[in-house]
Image 1 (cartoon, rainbow, N blue to C red):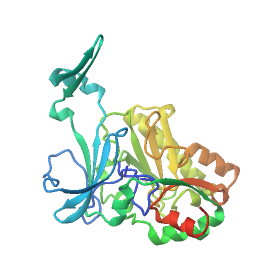
Image 2 (spheres, one colour; image 1 turned 60 degrees about the vertical axis):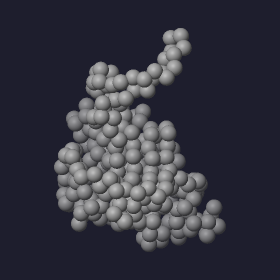
Image 3 (cartoon, rainbow, N blue to C red; image 1 turned 135 degrees about the vertical axis):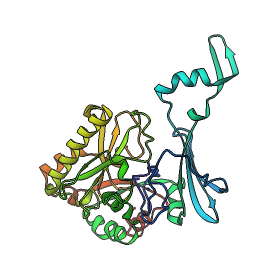
Length: 330
């Protein structure tokens, strides 16, 4: 399943997500998640029938497709994977070139890479609901201004009524799914968390590193719930998350962007760790809040996020946006 892009897909699945973060993949087993592995699987897409292209991006090199698999609605997300430095020798020696144009010192070619270097990362959401389909459709966005009163009277009631289940999050915390993917865990029930790769990251290079820290606490939905009491929790995630990434991926804290989304993609507080320089979905100023700033704001004002007016993007088809319009707030 976001805060699918991942979208990896770890970062999402709620009603009316602000942006199509590609999130967690398919819900195939009783736990609502399917553990990933490198083994060759049956081609579940051999009978896929395309209904429509929901959205695509030449810049991100991805496409979101709505169709059917065995008469069930499905969303298929295709993403070209980054070129890895350690594969360059094979890429140059094992590819075929077709000249398209030559002019003085400049020439362009069509390069056909060996199959194992020409993979397309594929995420399948099946069965997909109407909410999933709408989530990935290209829609116009609006910047919403949310006051303390707006949150209490508009946003919170909508969250409680409309948000997707976060059972898949609990499955991770309880080791019922994806246990082998956990990079680090602090089991403390008050300040602990699990750290694991977001599905938007294929883990083949650190240039687009993307991990998610998921709290063990289950009563914190979003930034709005945080007070000064949660500073030790945030500091623990910030510090231990950076240490775990340094140890595992040899990436120092100075190369990391660590932040929270508001609105998030799913309402169980989580923290994003991405490599600085990687233009991760949702890392813009209108949605991302650096955890260092969040900690300092709460230290200065214990009720900072309870009372502050916050801004965030919403897509035109988002149910929450409709509630703001109905209330005359947009």
